[in-house]
Image 1 (tube, rainbow, N blue to C red):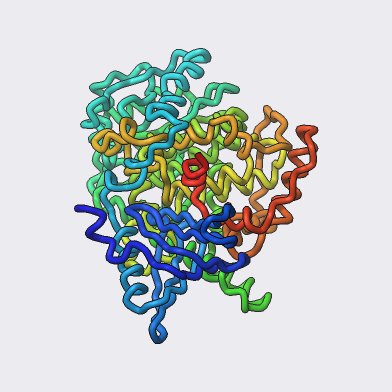
Image 2 (tube, rainbow, N blue to C red):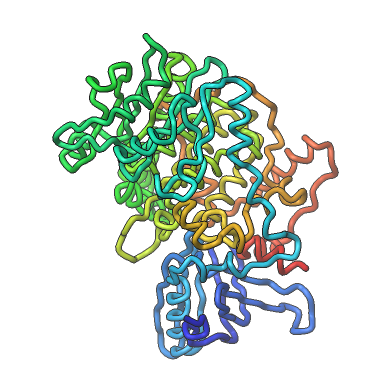
Length: 554
């Protein structure tokens, strides 16, 4: 397939671009294989000061068109929740532009996506892909205990297609036992170490559900694997992210839970967390409510409650706190799983580590956590982030699990404003890049797919860009002070707040908040007063893809 076949009209003059809270811009609209560009020179063609829209077409979630006479209006609803309107002279041009954007934004082949074509001069392809090797994380654990080992049992992805080639497992368990245990777990996701709590030697593991089925099948190797983690007389907790009823239904379909008779030292706790369609619909309803600026207070509060997003945030934080409490206060090891072990399981294990481990609250440590617990652990980003909140397409496997995680981390940063080294800007950037990116970090569903697509060899890593000195500074929290303690968040309903920085980002101006934070940063660094940003530069910054800005600036 050639991109040119999908572009019916490449250029249109005198297009008016409008976006809430920003002045309208008139200029020339161009469509390329991956970008939508609009350029305008207010002072004439030979004058500087060009205003640009530089939109990654992959970011378009929905295209809505309206024809009136000889012209038309296209509304672009983006995955980052931005809404743009294009007034295009000429009915045919309007229909062609809309059709071209729809076709280009629907290209589903990973290797046709922009990261495989993006080549900034300031970065090298190999940069950023090996910043957080599992071996380095393991060395930290090995310096504390000899109970764990690195295993390459999955080096060819045959033991588990969604695990990375190397995993951390109990030292007393050999690879043959792991392979047999894998056959007893859905998708081959046998229990592996997620986090070692150095304070008391407890461990948090993750897996998928056991395949006990209606006949209550057993697997001695799986029982042995979990048995080696606990000393005689010790107890552990299995946190199941499904309801007891859902787990029972799964058993009738071939899945199930660990029966007490076979795992006598483990106590099961059910903490149901929504995933899939209910979570996606909650996200959609919340965004609809946030965009409805005509509603009164009672109606707003009613819609906020009925979408249940804040309830999902509360439930995720509560379950992560439970896992952290078992490890830190009960001094008991924990196994976390739901059904597949690629969604709510990772949400809980990653959040628990931010709560427990101060190293995960640094900028580098948080990136390493995402690499380990979301990307390499097999969260299916390509499926879950295929559509955002505006898409009119029928829901398939989309679900904002990663956004829910970022929201929970934002709640932690709000309750503990000095304890996280990174700022809200990093969380927003991660959300944007998970749904549409110039970088290959969030491509595909697992490491096996990334290897097949040669993602590491052919695309740039997001971490390489974020960690450039000039960029890195933008993501740091100027109030940060190292806190070695566990940060226990309040999960009372009154403590959970709507993440306005994300959900209202394009609805109302953040100019004064941005200026206040710039002043905080200046005071923290002892620098000069910031130069007030012009309307034009704020417009350009709001509408342009950051990666494209970097590239275009040279």
